[in-house]
Length: 167
Image (cartoon, rainbow, N blue to C red; front, side, top):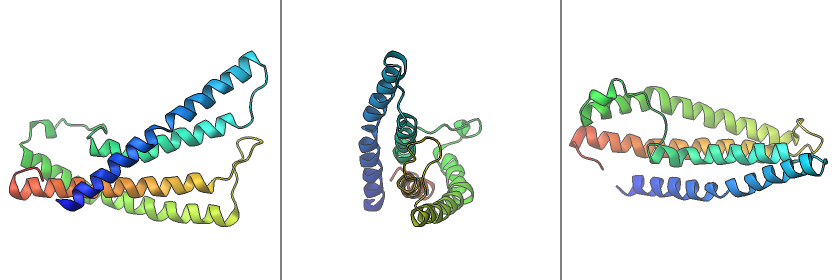
């Protein structure tokens, strides 16, 4: 189906793009270790930079992880079910748990990010005090990407449920 393939390509693209964030994150960590323990001159920015980069890596990568079935599942019941039985469990899970939670997270996250932008919110974790609204915007984007991937998976499960085949 065109819609699910488009969503999955967005998830794959965003996952592969955000994977590159690990490089500056590691570089910032290495720099901080050298500055702190060898040069005896710790940075004021490293903690927050690595915090934001790792969070971005983790959050934006969630949709890609869902698309590759990489999230942890407890399959005590599902492991013994036929494909249609698994699809029923997934459809019910998406309807009762996933979609309502994602809608709340997107809505609340958007309000949170807008409020942060309006007040020019800054971090209080270090003397550097970077703005927080870009990172809070990443939260909303990540929840939206995860929601989209959930729609694609939901549609795949409906196809299995009604046609007995992977769509």
